[in-house]
Amino acid sequence: MAIIHDKLPLRQATSSQWLPTILEDFPAFLQDHALCEKKAAASAMAFVGRWPDREVLVEPMICLAKEEWQHFHEVYRVLHKRGIPLGTNDKDLYVGALLRHARHGPEEHFLDRLLLGGLIEARSCERFCLLAEGLADEDMKSFYTRLSREEAGHHMIFLRIARHYFPEAQVNARLDELLDKEAEAMMNSPLRPTVH
Ligand SMILES: [Fe+2]
Ligand SMILES: [Fe+2]
Image 1 (cartoon, rainbow, N blue to C red):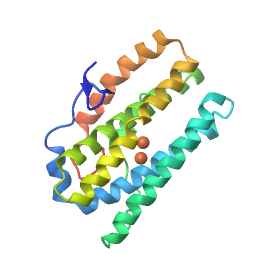
Image 2 (image 1 turned 30 degrees about the vertical axis):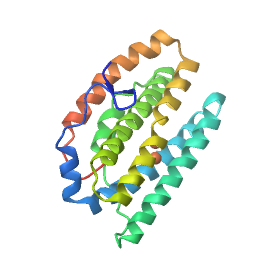
Image 3 (image 1 turned 45 degrees about the vertical axis):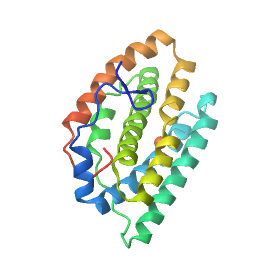
Image 4 (image 1 turned 135 degrees about the vertical axis):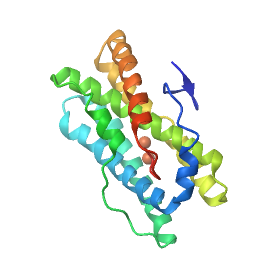
């Protein structure tokens, strides 16, 4: 397993062309980022709504939703300060491609959604690290430095829940498969000024 940025479990690093693409249209990137935080909050609450009987996930997912909601608010304030309106929901091709790998049986679906949730968090965090390293604007650099630290533990929330409900070997075997799918979805996504 390749180790990229603070032990994130990712198999393929983001292209060196991603950051220059972001910098070409940073306002569009900020709009997309705000929506990603909003979707991350909604997704965490969707876990609580869909699996309320899986008690071990309820507390951490409520906390995660609150943190992502706070991030949404912070990115919204950055937009507002710069006179950029909130964007409208755009299809996230990368997330769409990944979620198609979630199997249908109830147990398999639960495991896959947890692992895919963790991988999406890991990829997002890798990219916030790239912004923290590469941005010249001091305010934005410190904003993404803090954000990347706060995001750094999010993928582990999903993996810990998966390891609570499923045997270690089963989690590792499926994670191994989905790591390849994640790298494939990331590399097949067109370079745009977006988080994914
Ligand atoms: Fe976030
Ligand atoms: Fe997150």
